[in-house]
Amino acid sequence: MSTPENLPQTIGRYQVVRLLGEGAMGSVVLAEDPKIKRKVAIKLVKLDAVRSETDRHEFLMRFQREAEVSGLLNHPGIVAIYDVGEVEGLGPFLAMEYVAGKPLDLLIKTGVLTSIKEKLRIAASIAEALDHAHVKGIVHRDVKPGNVMVGEDGRVKLMDFGIAKREDANLTQTGTFLGTPSYASPEQIKEGTVDARSDIFSFGVLVFELLSGQSPFPGNSINTILYRIVNESPVEVKPPITGILPEGWRRVFDRVLAKQPADRHTSCTAFIRDLLEAVVEMDKDDRRAVLGLLRMNGDAPMPPIVSRAHDETQLIPPPPRKRSGRMLTVTLLAAALGVFGWFLLRRGRDVPFQIVTQPAGAQVFVNDLEVGRTPLSQPLRAGDRLRFVLKGYASVTYAFKPGEAPPTFPLAPVISDEVIDSVPQGASVVLNGQPLQGVTPLKVRWNQGVKNELSLKLGKQVFNWDFEPGEVPGGHVYPLQDATTADTRPEPSLNPNAPGFLRLVGEFPVRVKVDGKELGEPGPGVKLPLAPGTHKLELANPHCFYHDSRIISVVAGQPLLVALPGLAKLTIDTFPGTGRVSIDGQDAGIESDGSTVEVALGRHVVTIRGAAGPRTETVEITGDKHLKIQL
Image (cartoon, rainbow, N blue to C red; front, side, top):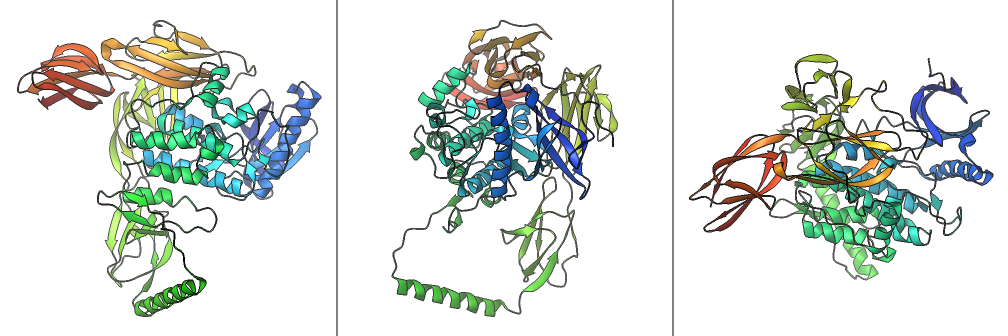
């Protein structure tokens, strides 16, 4: 087994495979336990980079604390610590569960997560893991997207309990600020004291960013960010998030991000349940799937799930009831007799049936109630309606007939036509190791039932991405980057204060504003140096009705490519009569008489001011479009 020259062959009993990541204060390597052939991630700290004995002691305490905390936690949504030790010449190390996947902050930054169902599934998984830690008396204190891994199998893992605190222990000095400023709670900033409600606030910031792509408390400096967290309400998201009621969004996030801990939700799962009430772009089954990830705290029963007329699902809390002990006993006895009678009536009619799909792993619904994943054994009777759902495959429904049911239910992968595009265009395309004819933009047949590996190349510029089953390009334009390293991802600078830089790639020029400061209109390929950290980026070109505002994260020594959308021709016709056209509140300079204007791809609000008054339409521009509107 070969390893890079600057890495040891072994760490303790573990055989080193390769470097996973490195920073100024430490590194993480992939290794294998030779005894059980298990892959592990090993965290090392560079003690020679620690300046003082006090800091050295603090880093060693964090290592020990992470190991101790993980010993108290046993949850599938929390990365497990397997071993802790120290090697002469290397210092202390932690051997932990290796998660093959991508950090959530990268998935947010690249815009890969597009489905609100997928985002809420991730949020629900994090909520369940955090609530487990809180029940055990553990406060994480650094909840942020960078401390969440999303595995290749879709499982979500919360990690890095290095600064976690047991509520019954005083491990850090009161008033000492630990954590990441953008996700810190007001009391964490002002007093340095935290409890589970502080994690709930940080989790609220994470979910806000996951759903909207921006921070609720943006700023051009740490002081500005901290001031807004302590004193200001979360920013308005414009345009509102598709699929979530704006009033519900404000109500839920005003509560979870309340300045006073007592005003927040009582748990992370309670916050997610409240948020689901504001979601309208999810069907009953998707809502059930997300709710199924959440467990109730304590011994409270799960509220019943009911369907409303418009096919949404709502949690209905049971009304409080007062009963005497005798009355409760009678009620329970009657319920038990009822269940026993139901069992007698059904006995002899149910048929134990082994449910198998090809491929395996499909969710199984019996009469719209999820019962597990294939393969599984399930009692069925004639007429029961089975439904199989597997990401990347077409849903299958079957009415059960004893003696006639097939031994295996085949699932067909979804095959779709997808367009692979890049900035700049003209890149060659390799899909799953096979070079394709043509260059970007290129239409391809996409099998959603398998993992797809995409590689784009144009000269020395490349882009690589792995798509999990069910994931599609979805119209994204992928920015090509200089292939400066083997995996096209440059290592972070060892100097945490080294500037990163911003480069815009697109078909049209834009005016750039960073943290409120005008930077002009940089030409193609120009690199704009920026200090490491979070910045507010504003881009505008009124000639093609392009306006964008986003929060970007600059890493020391690393480039950040921002791809601009393409352009399309929008033709507008109205009848009867015509009117003056404005787009996104700006006069377009044309009448609605079949005239054409060039616009940036994306969502636009088109208003025609005719004799009978204004008429407004919201349109999604994905290519040249002819819009016909009746006034």
